[in-house]
Length: 341
Figure (tube, rainbow, N blue to C red):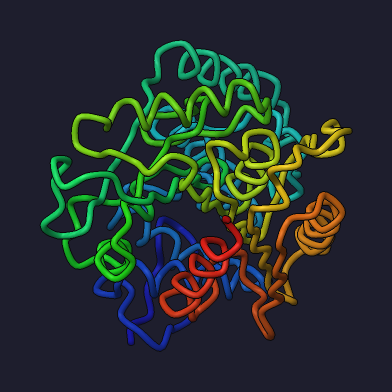
């Protein structure tokens, strides 16, 4: 291990050489140190994560702010808005950035963040990714599909990345004989950052447009699409599957989160939901809001007559996939497919 000063912040030694660590390890350490309020070490890991992957600037700005390095925090926050996209409204209330909002420069920076958001919403382009079972071609006939709906500020490539031939997603596509369609959120926030509109009509149109985009390579069995989402994407999938059961066989919602929950607007559930399956999962150590939304979504779907399975993952504090996702996802898919009559 090495003792090192990263851009002006002195930190203590780490059990790894951060310059050579894998991005997944850096992300885990940065998260764990931040949860433990060891912000200098979180900053160090996050800095090298940004250096390696080109993403994560907003979290880096937060870590700088929490260590009192206000100038560096302002720099990385503006850099994040330019390169990755920043939710200006969230930045305006994020407790991690409280020291910045107390600075006289904040109004000008906030205006800059809002300008960047408007630019990306107007100029950003949707992204659709596709992973097919090895050997599949459209002339072989229709197959079932999973619509991957990413979390807030993320992108489809974080799970459905066609460039990674050995990815977990490719392995699952082969095992399940299903296509995975990665759908970028309705609202572009940056070059590779998207949010969902939390407007069911707009978000449904975006998902259907993505499937149309890949229709030259994929024929989907009608009514077979499973919405598989994480965080904001999880809640989006639930909202869409509740309204459009003719298109969706159900949904897998992991750690659902949303600024605007609209499920109760569906006052008369579609009777087809009684032939649909839903998985709701969340870590038992995650934020109370995620746990509550998981339980409320499951309650609503149960009342609508859908087949429902709830999973609370023991000991999981992180807002992320469960460790056994490679085993659990095929089980969940089979549960949903068995519900469809």
